[in-house]
Length: 92
Image (cartoon, rainbow, N blue to C red; front, side, top):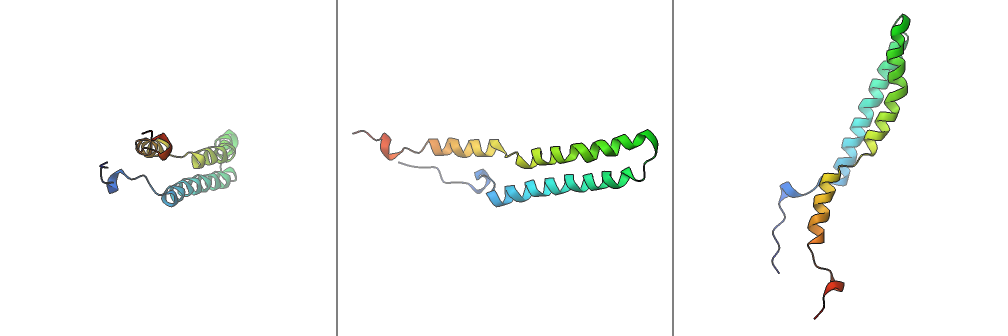
């Protein structure tokens, strides 16, 4: 039974690195929300609706983006794992 050696470029991103990336995206969205909140006190007239929309919508978008896991990398890992025979599937 020969297995192809694992290449470093074909390995999925580590869970810690993926979590760190998602946290960075979340923090950026929350920073933009803070900017929109400060803009609410500066922008005059009907233009205030734009930063208000940012304050309301950005948390929803930030949480949705932070919870998205890159499924293409996990699919490739599952495909490699499915090629490995299991002990229960062996029949003499």
